[in-house]
Length: 169
Image 1: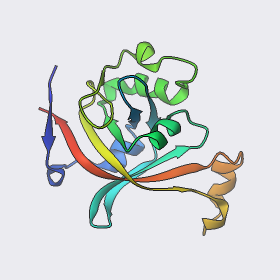
Image 2: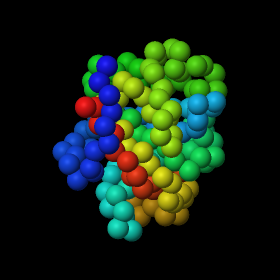
Image 3: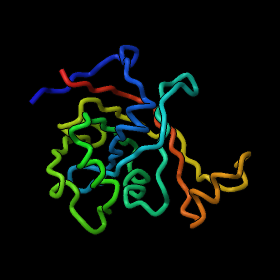
C-alpha cells in the first residue's frame, strides 16, 4: 500500500467541486480510543482570514458532531471512485448503532491530530477556527429552508484551517 507524504497545499490540482460534491469525503474526528466518521458531500475549500481553510457542514443530529465539538482537529479524507460503496455506507448508517469501520473494512490511521483512512488518496487535516449554527433568519433566499431544514435539523458550519495536506506517494 502506498504511504502518505505531506504536500504543499499550493501544489494541489484537485477539483474540489468534484471531490466534495460528486466523489464525497469522510469527515472524521476523535482519537484511537473513540472516533467517528461520516460522509460529506457538502462543503468547500478556500481562503479566509489569510488562511487556507475548509468549510464543513454537519447536522445537529449526526453522531460525528460530538466528536468534532470535543476535539480541536478533524480530517477530510478523499478516496477514489472504487470506495463509493463504503462512503455511501458511512453516510447512511450511524456510528451510534453500528461499527462503520468493521462494516466497511476501512483502515483508520492515528498518526496526526485527527484520524484519517489508509485507503484515502488525499487527506486535509483541519484545525477548527469557527463554528456557527445555520438558521432561517440568515437566509437571503429562503427556498433552501423548507427543502433542507423542514425538520429543523440545522447544520453546524465549521471553518477549519488546513494545517496539513497528505497525499499518497
